[in-house]
Length: 149
Image 1 (cartoon, rainbow, N blue to C red):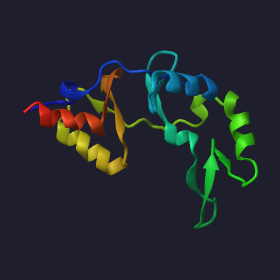
Image 2 (cartoon, rainbow, N blue to C red; image 1 turned 90 degrees about the vertical axis):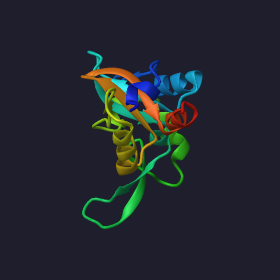
Image 3 (cartoon, helix red, strand yellow; image 1 turned 180 degrees about the vertical axis):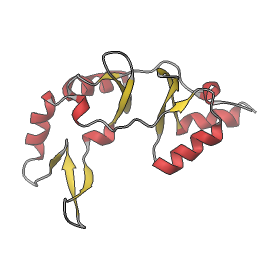
Image 4 (cartoon, one colour; image 1 turned 30 degrees about the vertical axis):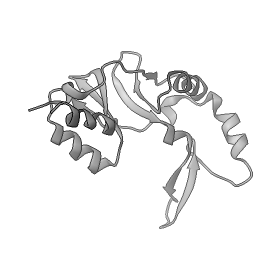
């Protein structure tokens, strides 16, 4: 029975929680990746940043049943999108990253991966060995199961 370590990608580009969004955007474009696991200064996985975090999210308006768009943790206004991107260059990764990070152990089963993908509706999951980041696995990596048979 295959395990996560059999299909994961072991070379992972990462971000540090104290990097700016500008630094991380450059890294993501240069490395042609859509996401980065986020590490603290001790190398511990503390979050996850994806290109989705640069596009805004629907958030519940406090004390309301309504949702409204937010970009970089600020409520989106129609005329100020370009200004928000300009001002976001100095925002630290830790201010907008997704936490806690959803991760999976390298010795877990493929069914565990599929359960997490469906439960959290995510495309990529950092792979850990204890607290150490050892890889990343994505929906695309499931294709390896087809061609390895």
